[in-house]
Amino acid sequence: MQFFPVFLRLNQQKCLIVGAGEIAARKIEILSKSGALITVLAPSFSTTVKSLEKKLALTLIQKEFDGLSDAQGFRLIVSATNNPTINALVADTANSLNILVNVVDNPKLCQFIFPAIIDRSPIIAAISSGGTAPVLARLLKTRIETLIPYGYGRLSELAGNYRDKVKAHIQNPQQRRFFWEQAFQGGVAELIFAGQDKKAEDTLNEEILAYATDAKTRGEVYLVGAGPGDPDLLTLRALRLIQQADIVVYDRLVSEDILNLIRRDAEKIYVGKQRDQHTLPQESINQLLTRLALEGHRVVRLKGGDPFIFGRGGEEIETLMENNINFQVVPGITAASGCASYAGIPLTHRQYAQSCTFVTGHYQDNQINLNWEGLVNPNQTLVIYMGLLGLKHICESLIEHGCSKDLPAALIQQGTTKHQKVITGTLESLPQRILTHPVKAPTLIIVGNVVRLHDKLTWFKPSI
Ligand code: SAH
Image (cartoon, rainbow, N blue to C red; front, side, top):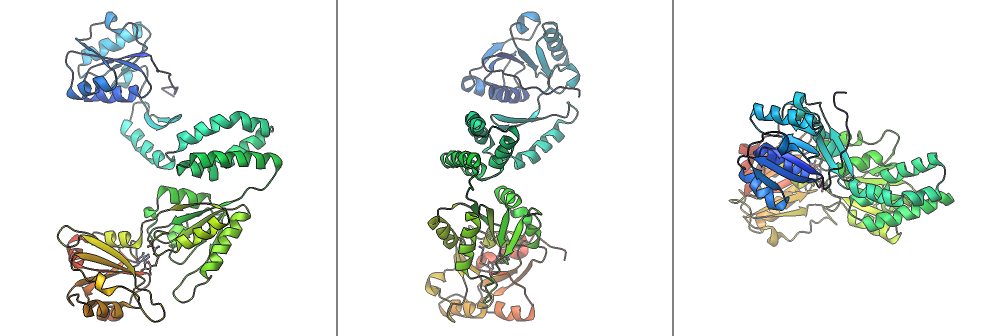
């Protein structure tokens, strides 16, 4: 270990930056986060440093660094000049005074180095390559950033405030560790990440009591949007919850690749929902979620796309609410966004469409109940979910109500996945074309002049 990692308290400590260019400015900004009192010494100051002067209460000293008298009294010095002689002089001077020194881009002259920092104060993670490859350290930092939710700081503050109470209620250290592990990976943490701090605190209190008296706590339900298929399109929160859940209740639209991300020992319950052969009726799904949560499980209800867009998510949470069960809704990328992006068809476009409407083409009692007049608008994009079966009927109705029969239309099969297929035509020709190109569900239909852009903007070309 070439450099030993420590965390310095710099609040109200005098720190000196020698040099006042862009690199110096970055060091000033990062140091100022610790509350350091910063002096900048340089013969001239860049506009960036000047612009920070007031905001960060900097002391600017306009002169060339020339030894002991400039360095005395500081706790830490950073030399960020492009003059090697000055940099060496700063390092020597600091060493002779036993002041910690960093010379930017010159690890040999450094008594300390700046790590790549992940800041979830009071939780801080620092990554260093010992000065050998700062870019690599930064890349690693970016990867770790995605694993640490933004609410971690607040979670750790809450834990800090409750340390004594937990100690008093749960005396056995091993049990206490187990308790905290559960709190940090369960409902309390998720409530904090969702910005519901007060509720998180109430839940923590309940859990402390329940743990100490051996009572059973309630589970919770996360209604999670799984997006249109490509697992890379999951949100960070969706991924985290999928990997933590005890039970995942999913339906037909959730792709195999996404199901593979579920924790191995979690229970998976398929509740189907194929057209006309609902494996479990909606009411039973609502009841199932409630029952599982009451049994104390952490349940993820995983749905294709976004739970609140043709997903009946509203009905599921209504039942949860009636039963006083904690839940959260995690939005997902809806099929319209996913398919449009991956098919190179922008849903709006300055020239072609100023609005976009999502409708369902689902037959109900042998009818498709849509306000056809309202859908006839050449400057609008129309996205039709569940429209394959009724495609002919939909196209004919649109033409009947005033749409041009030459209005472009596209059908996207299994959008965003390696099986994606895009078939384009017009309102008149698309139903015919579908007959000669066998298609597989799920499919989405986009109608409007934006479909013209598909040929030009196609970028996603799955190789299967
Ligand atoms: N909640 C979902 C929609 C559920 S309705 C969402 O927000 O996307 C089911 C319909 O969504 C399907 O019939 C189909 O029209 C559409 N759909 C979902 N995923 C799709 C995909 N990968 N490709 C094409 N259409 C899709």
